[in-house]
Amino acid sequence: MDFDLRPENPADYDSIDQIVTAAFRQPAEASLIRRLRAAGDHLPDLCLV
Image (cartoon, rainbow, N blue to C red; front, top):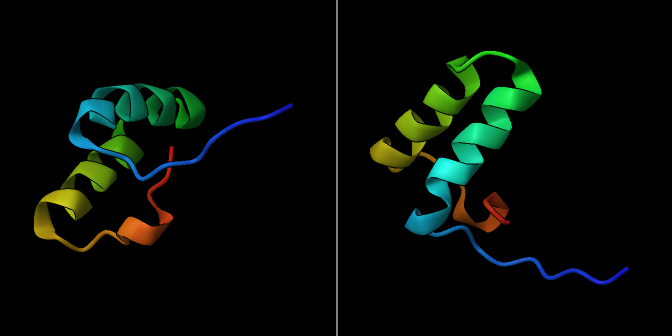
């Protein structure tokens, strides 16, 4: 099985929110990710899709 990892980009944000919300069964974690991005406190090297 082959796959490619790449840095996330703004076009990915809605899909990431949906996946994170489904994984945690609540929107709190997706909201946290959005707030970290907005504040510039996320770690881009770890934000891969």
